[in-house]
Length: 73
Image (tube, rainbow, N blue to C red; front, side, top):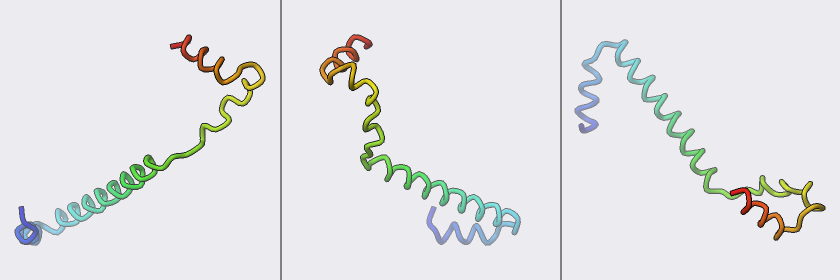
């Protein structure tokens, strides 16, 4: 459907239906912008996991932790 035929069809609809279409378009725009923000943040790398195992540092070396993780798999 071309935009010109859509606009012509839109103008022939009752006003309450036109308002519903406008609200739906605003909802889709909001959802698209929200999804776009989420996708952009997924591509950036964060170090939120850093020092997550700090409490185990005294008990295990990094190699021992790797072996322990493999045992749990």
